[in-house]
Length: 93
Image (tube, rainbow, N blue to C red; front, side):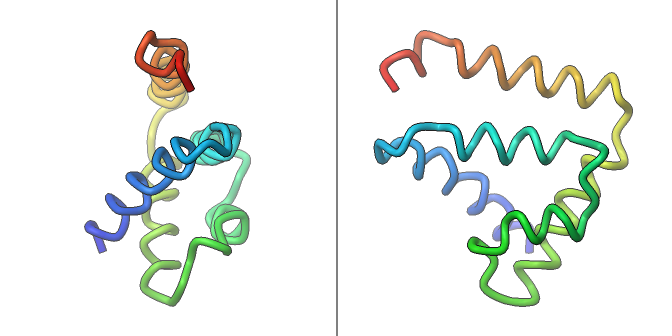
């Protein structure tokens, strides 16, 4: 299941790299760190990427990991993501 989570996280930037823009990635990250979004809501949002019960469970556990973090940690994660979006390496995209 850990491999599935890693593959899911690897697939999203590749999806953005394909030229579709990175709005999807930003939306998923924002929903991931939003404490107002419950595990079932998160699973529903990512339904098109979930292909079975194991995937749904992995997505649920992934979201729960973020729900277990402090608000400060979630804020810092959001700041880190924004720094990466604004980096010179992402500028061409």
